[in-house]
Image (cartoon, one colour):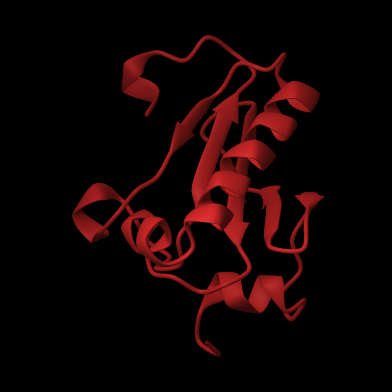
Length: 112
């Protein structure tokens, strides 16, 4: 998808600070972090949201969670919040499925 920000990051057209990568998933730092550790985990396949990912690429969704754990193990003692926003009203601004890995401090519910 040529107009998708995350597809362009996956393609290497837009720079990002990569944290982890597999054949099917990339993880990079959020440009507006909400916690000391704030990394986005993104499937390389374009799907609009987590529900589509679960229906169309469930094995990649599971891999996204595994990569999230790897990031958390490396950067915040293995403890983290994993957030998927699905839809504009829920805060999704890029309509390519992605998980927010947040940690590095005690996160109150209000930090979500």
